[in-house]
Image (cartoon, rainbow, N blue to C red; front, side, top):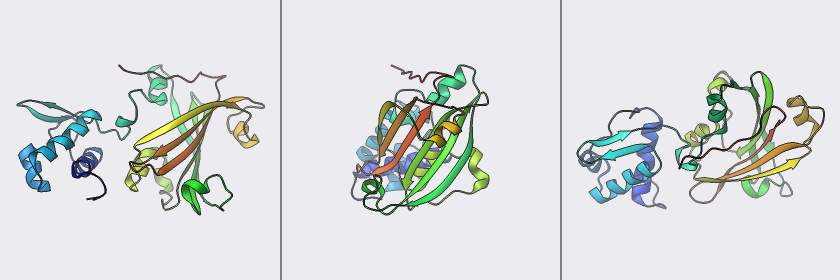
Length: 233
């Protein structure tokens, strides 16, 4: 476990990893507090703090006398009370597909804008989201350069944030900036547009230490569908 963070946080991460990877499936109970105490060799207070974090992040629900039930295995739980945009589109009856995913390593010199985040190398991922068969969003993600390119056979199930998590780069928070821009020609071609402007979004994601683990740019063809945000109170 990592000694740089509180013990209960490290235990929470271990349990969360077990939830995400299906060791504790949705609808099942976590081990009892006594069992977790014995497993991790820590006090009941430490276990309770770890469970409280999991509950706050929406992974479990705890009921007195009934135990702690797993209610979600989504890695994205704690990042927002809002639904993902893809989920909103699916609920509205649209079919959202991910296509044309490409990976490459970029060598960065000190003058490059990404050098401040990743130093000498980063992994670039580009892909398009299609809405009912029409190119709708173009994404360009930049990740730490120590992340391996995934097996090409697994791209249909590729999840960016799960992949970061599996390579020990958990996302603790992110900042989104939205803007209007005239994007590069290759972005317009990918979106099947002959001219701009388009809606853009820059995301910078950090881990629990404040280190940047993702810089991404999304360009939306809002002539097909406006960008939407929905929050649950």
